[in-house]
Length: 169
Image (cartoon, rainbow, N blue to C red; front, side, top):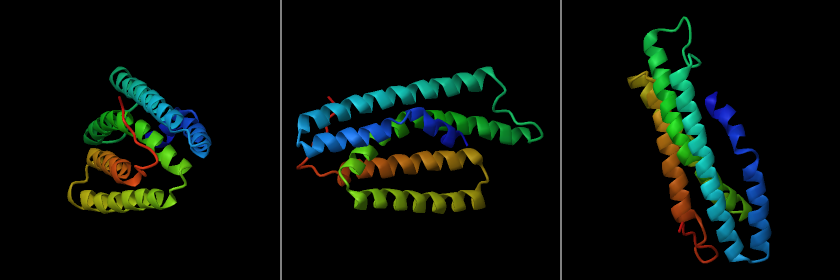
């Protein structure tokens, strides 16, 4: 899937972030953690932006996303889905930084809540959408919505505010 292929686009940065977040947290160096978080957030946003632009350029300049022997209606839905996914890169890549911090903090309860709630809402939404609409782009939009809401909820309520205050200045 496109999601799986683009998962490689983070170039292993998430693993490195977990390591360095953990290292700076062990030294109780809050300023370094904040600097690392802010820098990584912007780098991941830029990677997401570049991927979004590449997907949109590919979509408009090639027939890569046109599938033969599939009704034209589904080809249009696939194109809309790629556009939605491309926009989602702007959200999903910065969320990797938040997830890396939570992983390095060994806050596995929050990670479990993040994963379980995301998949529970995804499956529920997918079943509803498939039963009522049968539109591919609605599935992709639902995935983006749930990923964003759950990720931001974890960011807002899941971090230990006494240890680490995040401000994107």
